[in-house]
Length: 283
Image (tube, rainbow, N blue to C red; front, top):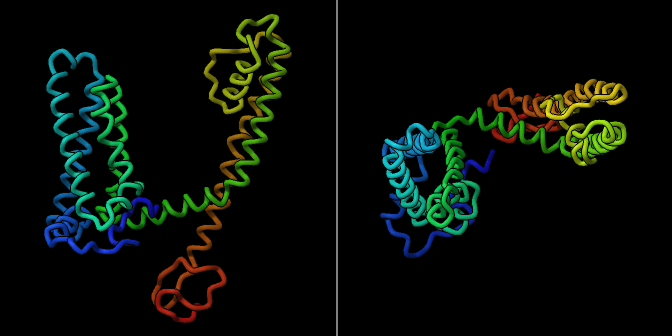
């Protein structure tokens, strides 16, 4: 998950007027190697967690009469903190534009915008729950590289499976359209719940995916028989994509377990002859 990392110096040149103060500020905000940087990251995580907690408490009706105003003030204080932090990030990087359009930069901006937009569109500040995405920084802050590598493996497996999954989902859409249309023809004259083909397709999707809300159900014998067939097919719907992704994961695992006997590092191509880290011959 490389999008969790932003290198403020990559693909950008240091401005001539980049002061030592900005360099120091960058070290504190973007790096976690120094005591000041670690302290800043910990404070940031605490503020993110506090913001999420306050937002959840604001939705509890029984707390509003006594604590509503206090929670709102706390939320504004946290928003101002994040606003200053975002501006300092822009100030302390070589290329503010690159940071602003990066994944983390966009998330940082979206985490503060709802509170200001709430002034114009009341109620929209609930979208600040997007701040939870900022907790992804915990992987970088605490150097959980192993978890990031596992995440990259899953993302690669899903990406490689997309052509097969696309074909499978297209096949599923065809089937729910057919089954929904058939149920409409069978049920709509007797069962008012199947009032249209789109509603019937919705029922077919709910049934095929084994969700089974129960808000719509067939009443005729033929309709129940067709529903039974769809329910049985539903198990295959769950199994096939799981098998496709699992197969890709196994291939990714095989790809990542070719280990150099000299330095012990893995991640080599299956046809690799020499280690890409130390240059030794791979047995």
